[in-house]
Image (cartoon, rainbow, N blue to C red; front, side, top):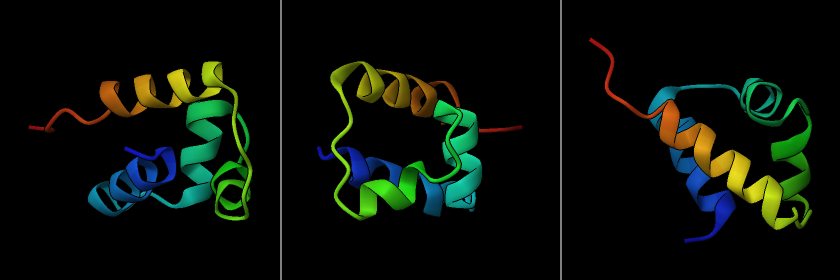
Length: 61
């Protein structure tokens, strides 16, 4: 599954702005915009983002 697709799905599900996601996940508020414009992250960055999504995808009570 493509990273950007995972992020877009997470953003829709959580109603989180892309800048907030970038800031929280990797410390870069422009990260999602850069991905949408063709940025190719390194594997270590992909791993960080996938871990962030996994940690923060649990249903809230």
